[in-house]
Length: 115
Image 1: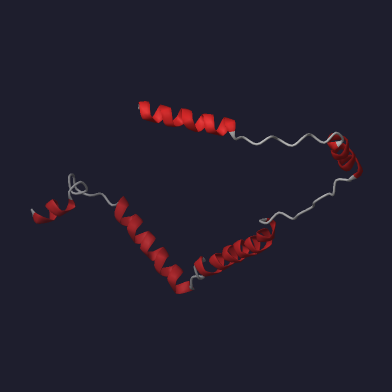
Image 2 (image 1 turned 180 degrees about the horizontal axis):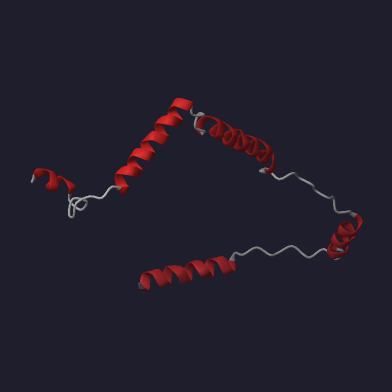
């Protein structure tokens, strides 16, 4: 650790001894900078946002997707025979529910049949 500090001290001493002199300041530098900024007008930069061009295609794709899924996922209209079959099934099921079942048969129907 002592060697590192002595090397560091030697480096610091070398850099302090051989550092360059800064150039003299220009007397009118500040005045020139202020004059150049006062004379130049700010140019308005109306750069379009890079992501705004994605909005119309994304909107069109979304609407097309909604329309297409509505057309493909909508059930087809049912025919008169299908409606009649559904109605008969519902009536039959409802009639079976309303029938009086013997005690215990409605709870365990398979056991009542086995007895």
